[in-house]
Image 1 (cartoon, rainbow, N blue to C red):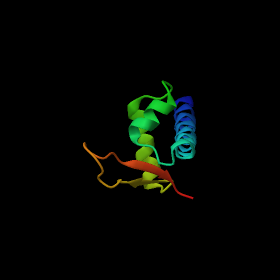
Image 2 (cartoon, rainbow, N blue to C red):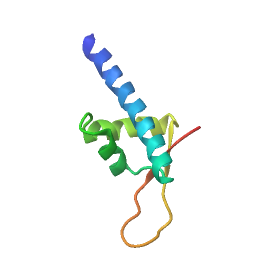
Image 3 (tube, rainbow, N blue to C red):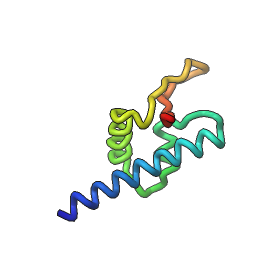
Length: 85
């Protein structure tokens, strides 16, 4: 019984943290964050699997949009995550 409540609370907390990270990253840099930025800015509190699972849920619920930036420069462009208003 408590396991489900704890999991729900962690997922909700992770979702709120991801939204806060996306908004603050956009305010600071003028660009939406990549997955790497989100993982780095959430700190050690959440592991990569939880962040990936939460991003998938948020995309399916249309809380976030996934955007591919235009190719500019070398390397593979990373997906950017924007908050749906």
